[in-house]
Amino acid sequence: MDVLQLGRAKLAMIITVIVAVIVIAIAFPFHQEIEAFFRQTLPAWLQANLWVQWVFSGIGVAILGGLYKLWGSSRSTPHAAPAINITNATSRSGGLRAQDGTGKGVNVQEVEVERDIDVTVTPPGNTPPKT
Image (cartoon, rainbow, N blue to C red; front, side, top):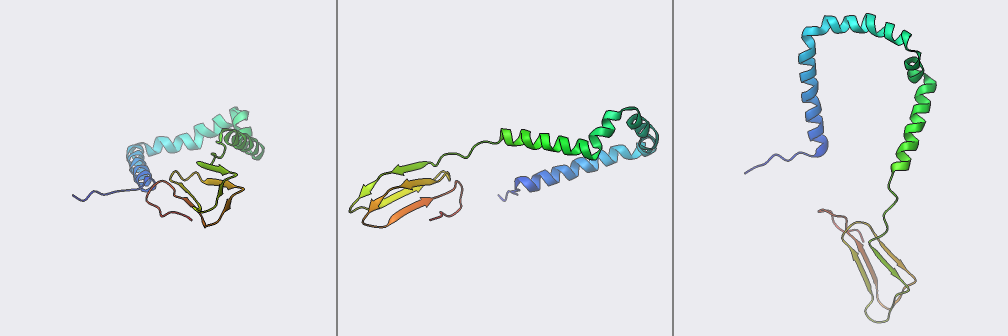
């Protein structure tokens, strides 16, 4: 059975278009009332509330944008530690092989080997390994 598989971006786009069409279809019969609101009521409300003018002025947008950036950077997670850490490893005949299947990475330090060093990081999923 063929199943249509959509990515998250395509699915979000389809849902957005469907919602937009529904909103337009519902608002169309009331277009005269909506137009009157934007021509009369909204400008009067904006003039009565000076804080709204400040928020949408250049200074308000810059300050709010800076606060948003600070808030977003404080919420960001630090980089995760590598999945495999090897330090001061010595091998004379077998070499060194480190494989990571989580995609977090491998950290190898101060290693003495006689054969090749084989370090493989494989991100989760079906992507080929990076060596």
